[in-house]
Length: 530
Image 1 (cartoon, one colour):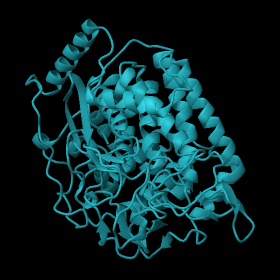
Image 2: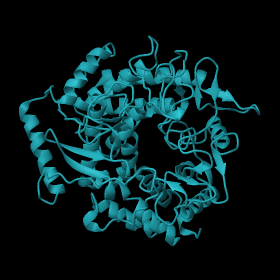
Image 3: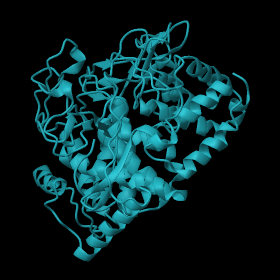
Image 4: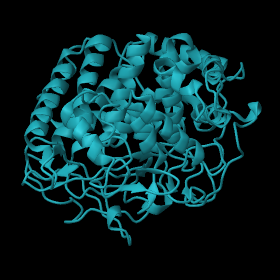
């Protein structure tokens, strides 16, 4: 997820028009991403670039803008290569922020269970310790955040990896600089290719990740993988909104950001497929059907009812039916958040109106087409539908999921329909709910049967206000780390020593986010022995 360079202009309410066609948007986006378009007064450009160089020099301890290579990835993303328990030594940490260290000390003092405390102390700063690279791009602060054992940036993961720190940005300029750098990197990445889910460190990289070399899709430099996932464009909107809300800082929301926002709306409209399938298609030779899309790479057919097609789920697995309901919910919520940023940070009423209009259209389609009835007659939100009356009920651990809709703010936590849906997700009604001797929770087809993603337990705890429900979830999370002190992608429900991904920063950060949240809203849960 990211690449390129950035330019800034004063707020302009008339730069976006709902009638602007996608061809014009794409042409302008390509010029922005490659640095061809230079907008804004030269003096302001030079001043901003100089300020960025000073900020970066300060972050590097006065050494100036020197590139520091990221740590090498683990030998194989499939191997159980556990990192050393606990945090890296001080000299090997990618970025240290005073407020984060203070937060670790504050919350740790509230945790009675020694192992849970040690896991929090290692997991909460894992993104800053191991995945962040700060630098300059076109004279502006740039941040590249890898997902962990895969040395590329996912739009989804990188956003979620920073969420646990957003409440601290107003008090920590180092953190604020990191957020600004990632927001800028994500905007340039979207302009490079709005259909990509992951990006290489260099926007000029000729090759993506090794397993993508024979993919049949439009190939673009700098793209690590090109799986179209609706949520990949939702997460940058959420990151921008959360940062602006927490800091009040308008600096990231320049013309490059606005161009990426307009392209996001245009891409969502394109994937409503009202006028044909659109330009995106994807095929991959694989012995796993979840790695490719059928029907010449366009996916299963669907009736154009106003919902947004998604080729793949947030697990990177192919959709069965193209309308992924959790992702469409997330799109509605984040489009409305984008509108608030466009108005409040840029006075861009045209962009705000366009985002709200699309959000309202998708919300109406969700209400009409997004629910189904289970065999017992219970009405729930479907996981996927096709607009022809076909619907699939299941849930996958990756966020956005049905279970996560309350946590994401897509529904009211007390909403009866969502509560019925969440209860069904955490039951045998969901074919990917697994209950073993060591842990119970939701997995998905990505890893397979009997494999629980600890992320699902974290999301369930984040969505709950019941200490009696949360405490057993914490106990299972504590006891399923295979002795590593970190959260893994998936663990065998009967034997957590069998797991995938020893270095998965999103899950580590989400666990840290849970513990910090409990310290503030339910400290008694942490104060009691598990």
